[in-house]
Image (cartoon, rainbow, N blue to C red; front, top):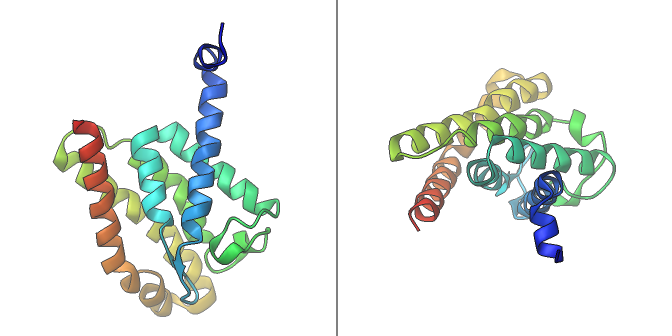
Length: 173
């Protein structure tokens, strides 16, 4: 049995290898950022949506959990190369934890344009709800709403459209 057949025959190995690659994609997407405070604008939500939609709910959520574990253990995978448990307790923690639910929800996209659009939008909301609520403990709800949601609406619309277009193109061909 050659190495590729052996890999394909081991579903757990394949699953965790894909999740590890997904966590690397997520780490790379965190480094593409606009330095805003308290929440940087990154490509992470686009990556999270695509990980879930293309890899499925379980793999997408597993990739995000690996990413969070890598960062908690000190690997510089978070935005601006930050790392450590303090990031998971700081102003952006709610957004980071929301990535898990977002990837899971995006994995439910299935087929059909309307369903995919609605699911990808819901997946983005799964990041913003815990993100804004957690951020409000640092800034108050009004500032959290402005700095953690309203400021991101245009970019979120673009990233949702990109995820939708990517998903539609890959599912057609």
